[in-house]
Image (tube, rainbow, N blue to C red; front, side, top):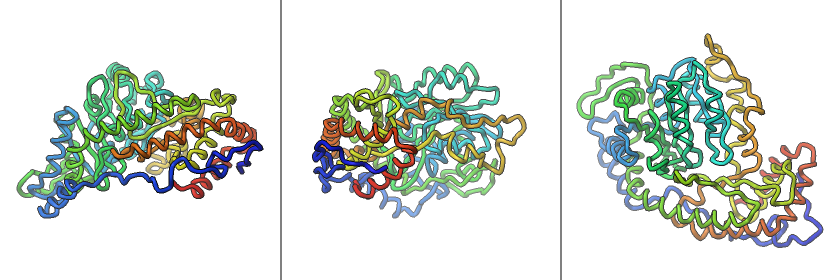
Length: 462
């Protein structure tokens, strides 16, 4: 899709030759922050010579597990190599196995759905709530079958899902709730920390997360001692490795090699000491940005119900076609044009997921272990049907996200310029609406939009 400059003056918009709202020298601050305290923690491990959970006498991993259990409010925490491994290990520790069904929201990172698949369990997808972007409890109820073993409750972008309703449904059917809090460190639901409400719960420590490590890591939390023991065995070949003394090399069950790294555990322990203060500043910075953007009626900012808090890992904005004077069917083209306008101004607006999870080829073409788990006796394949996921498709069509830029506690000045850009784009809404209306009537506009997005990303790097 080639964007033509409208006849009226559009000199103010950077996408039409105007000056950027965000100066090129005002850049996203590096994340995670690396302080002298973090460096000292890493050096401490290097001097110790103990680098994994298999090292006799290693303490960094155990101390991180104790610290995170205290922070979340659970009895146990088990550290693993990454967030996806945490979800696979947690599901297996909870008894999920071949042929079981695991309910997963249709909008999430793909790891939420491939984790059960790695256990040869069948992910069953449900639509989302269009306001919270989380699993819709009504859709959940309709998806449950006698084979349903667990529900993966993703707290997408950092906002807790409706855990009371979800847990009530799970309790009625005897189903295990597993919180996927990979993006929600520190968020709270009705006064309780996420990761403390499900039977077993997971976090990611990926370098991009609010609570990060210097690479990859994952955490599993639970109040069930048996589940914690099983998770500890599953992370390392099914062994029970003593804190001190000789390793037996006896495998008591089929496990993986998901050992955590002591250097990364020490780094996260150091980050955790700074985490509450950083989260408080991030809350202030993000709230100021959202307050200014919300004053532009064409943009719908994230909503936070009064009974929960948001971790603000990712910020998702939706466009309102009616506020731009457009028909509802113009939502997608409008989002594409607005997204490019913001990028031209220096705001790294970008999609998060391009299609519903059930539309990914690994699921539509059943690319598991050959034809498994779908070929297992009694397993009924569920072909992808777009009409089953209207909310997910609409949100993907009319929304874009901001990622990483707001995480650093000194991001305030940058976010203020981002707010300037949103306001500038809104002031030029008529020009953008005209482009979107034209695009909406252009054949194959979606493919053209993807190409144009790539062109604008190259022409206007953030």
